[in-house]
Every structure is written in C-alpha cells, then in structure tokens.
Image 1 (tube, one colour):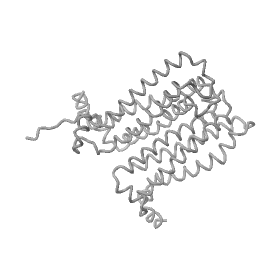
Image 2 (image 1 turned 135 degrees about the vertical axis):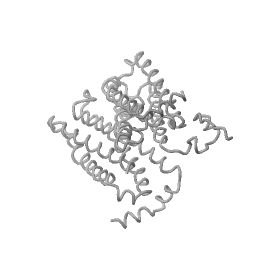
Image 3 (image 1 turned 90 degrees about the vertical axis):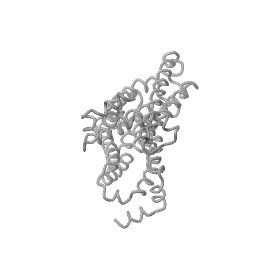
Image 4 (image 1 turned 60 degrees about the horizontal axis):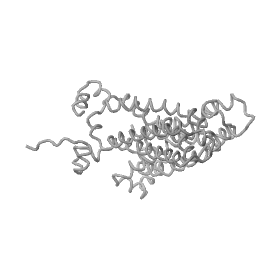
Length: 184
Length: 154
C-alpha cells in the first residue's frame, strides 16, 4: 500500500494537480460544495427515518425521490475525492484524519446496507407511520452521526497537527503508519 | 468602514480564536455541518418548486417540514460564521469573495423569506413562477456557499 502511494507521488500529473493554480481549488471546492447535495439530501431522508421531518410523507417516497440525488452527489464526492488524494497521496495516506474518515465511510456503507435489508423486509408496515420503529430510527440516527463524522474528519485533513513530520504521540504515529527513519 | 473591521478584529472572541490551535478548525467543521443541513433544507424545497423531488407532497407541506431545519441551520451558520469572521476581520475586509458572499447572503435571506416562501405557500401560484423562484433560490444559495469556500483560497 505504501509503495503504491509513493508510486502515485512520483506521477508528474499528481504534482501538476497539487501545484495547479486553479484545478486544485476548483476540485476541492466541488468536493466541499457537493456535501450540500450528498449529505444534505441524505440528511432529509435520515430525519424522516428518525421521525423528525416530513412525517406526513411516506418513507418510500423520500427514499425513492431524494436518494437518487444523494447518490449523484456521492459519485461526484468519490470522483473529486480520488483526485484530491491523487494530488497529495503520501501525506493523505499518513493522515490520521483521513484514516478515520475511511473507517467511517465503510461504517456508513455497512449501516446503509443493513438499513436497506431491513427496509425491504417490513417497510410496508411503517412506510406511512410518522414515527418508524426503533431499529429504523436508530439506523437514521447512526447515519446522521457517521456522515457528520466524515465531514469533520474531511475538514481536519487540511490541518497538519498530527502529521508524521511533527512528531505526534506514538499512538498517533502508529495509527497514521508513520515511517520512523533511522537516526544514524 | 475599515476602522470598524479593525475594531472587530480586536474583540476578545477574535483574539481567543486566533490564539488557539483548535478553535478555528473546530468552529469551521461545525460551520460545514451547518452547510450540509442548509443545503439539504434548501434543496428539498427548491427541487419541489421545480417539479422534482417530493412531488407527492404539496409545496406548502414540503416547505413547512423543511423550514425548522432551514432556520436551525441558519442559526448554526451565523453562530459559527460570526466568530470565524471576528478572528480574521481585516483579511475579510480585503477579500473579494467575502463581500460577494455577504451580498449573496443578504439577497438570499430577503429573497427566501420575502419572495420564495410566500410564493411557495400560495396554492394558486402559477408553475412558471414557482419554478423561477426555485431556480433563483438555488443559484443564490450556491453563490453564498461557493464564495464562502473561496474566502479560504485568497
């Protein structure tokens, strides 16, 4: 894995993207602004699942009509996110925040998968219910918490407090996979 | 005008944030959470005004349900955005994106409460009017967000 990101770092395009005057900020801004589409639409669905919004609208109508917008946002997020990683591969790979973010992304995927399995099982019973069953409300709440965590971690990648070259705590160094260079 | 910004930069809130390693990023992260919620609560209504999204619910029903979340995120945005501004008021004074954002924000608030929400609550509003209002709202709030992001690049 490390050799892979180090190989990416040698690409001329990676350096060009990182140092570009307009492309990097444009991709970065697209990545940030798409949060309104991806997490924004998802949050509306989650709030319905928790029972805090659109209580008079069927859950299936929200998932059917809003999730496609959210998925479109997610695709843009992944595409721009991959480019941002490509521009600064080694530092991002060694970022604690990035690693926590990836773990949360996987957790978000598992939560969504679990939720959809449950939905397909007995949604007809609570589709029009203003306050869905506990398990559904928990899935909605967990989703809100996970994606909030992803946003916070994503923002924190930009700061360098825990970077390997700043000698973080041993625990952080281990989490970030810092390579300790021989001192002699 | 510059004197005012200079004084705002000297407030204890601004100084505290500037002197802290964590405060600015922390407040900024919460500002971003507010952006996601603001985006969702604006989009869901504007999409409906444009004839997309929750079409099985009426426009007034969608607006009524989204409004508390819009107001809540607006409060969150102001309560985090003002401290961020106080910590770098002079930088903002010289920053074009900041002024673009403030103008768009003023237009957005006046338009949303004065025009968009009023038209959305009327059941007899013609299709072209609701669609136009939805499109303008999307553009104005997108400008606020994009200009906001761009403050950090200059």
